[in-house]
Image 1: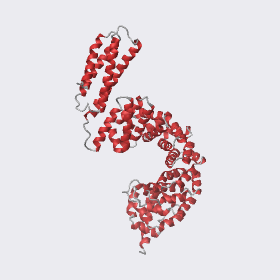
Image 2: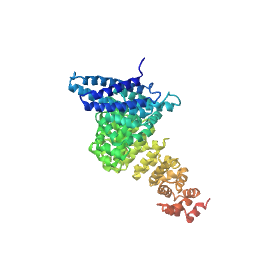
Image 3: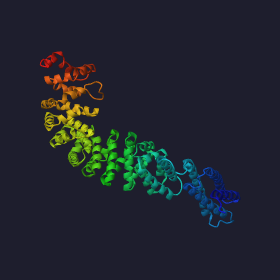
Image 4: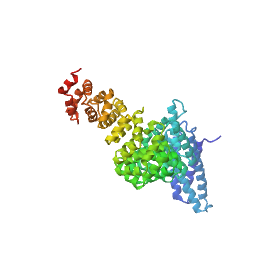
Amino acid sequence: MKIPETEHINQLISSLSDEIPHIQTFKGKWAVIRGKLGDLRTQVADFGEFPGFKSNPLSMELMQSISQTLQDAVLVASRCRESELSQGKLKTQSDIDSISAKLDRLIKDGEILIGSGVLQDGVLVGSKREVVRAEARNLITRLQIGSSESKNLAMDSLLGLLSEDDKNVMISVAQGVVPVLVRLLDSSSSVEMKEKTVAVISRVSMVDSGRNVLAAEGLLLLNHLLRVLESGSGFAREKACVALQSLSFSKENARAIGCRGGISSLLEICDAGTPSSQAVAAGVLRNLAGFQEIKENFIEENAISVILRLLASGTAFAQANAIGCLCNLVSEDENLKLLVAREGGIQCLKNFWDSVGAVGSLEIAAEFLRHLALCPSIAEVLVSDGFIGRLMVLLNCGVVGVRIAAAKAVDALGFSTKSRKEMGECGCIPPLVGMLDGKSIEEKAAAAKALSNLMLYVGNRKIFRKDERGIVGAVQLLDPLIHNLDKKYPVSVLTSVVNSKTCRKQMVAASACVYLQKLVEMDIEGAKKLWESLGPSKLWGVFARS
């Protein structure tokens, strides 16, 4: 009759425990092993409390490893009972140390297996969520115990599970996959295993709940990812960039990446990486450039030249991230704006603008244009290069974010009477008037600010007055109940046409006086002057011919 596996293991433990006191060679080492055998016996008994442990692949694999290690220990113990060590003292000592280390690992694996809960998972029935939860728990446990080959296969299976669905990622994160992955990066000596681990981490970083848990791992995870950036394969570097893109939104992480040579490694990828890795590397740089504290790192690394080369030759995704990075770098920095212009940035922007098929991709381009236009000498070049006409197209598009960015760029380009006149003649006024009635406050505010600038040119006021929507749209924005909108801009728009009797009549009919009284009390710039222009002495003239 075949002896059950647990009974066989207990027999081996008893036999070895009884023999150890009679061994005279390396007595101290064997005494330590005997203590470990006691722990192992207790653990094997604990396994017996789980009815399904004999059918669980993980517990079966662990029991086989325990049995094999104990059999090896019995052989080494018998050699130590010999009067002369047949295989030499050093070899025997090495074998004893190996057995001791294996017992440590097996006991630790057993603790992980029992604590994981996988032995409590019965037959996988019920909802898909429960099936995924059990599978995730099983794979996470396999990543922590057993041979390197077993862990490698588990990592492949885990990546497949996470690739199926974002919900699978959320379930796995809830089961504790992230700390296990970080420990694997820290402990694994296999390059292949580390790269697979980075691939799984990058997948986890694409889901909000996973992103938050990854961020909690702090500098330990960042340091591992940065090492992959420096010396990993092309595949691993790209996956590390994906993870870093999610982790580089916080100031602390951005500073850590900048201080540890991350910017240099990312720029190297932008210069010589694969097209897809260039795009995600530029995405990380885009995030980092948003922090004033590390802009100096970009300057030291000559980042502008590298980013402009990527803007000139990268994929559309890479180019968009390159523009986003430049946006953040040149913000509030006149010298960097001039440097970008000198190194061909305007031509690169024009080429990108004219080559993009989807108008939605031009939001970041319009934002970059606005930043450059805030430098007067650059603004003149932008006007002469035909960017007003390009903005006109965006103002009429169906994407709210693009319209808002375009309106802000229009405001920045309205730096002179000449440019304001040209924008009026190009047809910018009507779409801006339409935006006054937009659904979002940000759209209304951007339109009002741009119009208040364009109306400084007298000819544009005539265009505005011809559009029946203009007065009503601007008056509505005076309502104090509309928050997060600077009232001085709609006040300025209305003030520019208040000398027209027709316009005054429209303002009064739209309840401008009611709103203005409240704005005067709030001390809004220009409100008192406009209110006085609509006062009783003026209204008589407005309604005299009604």
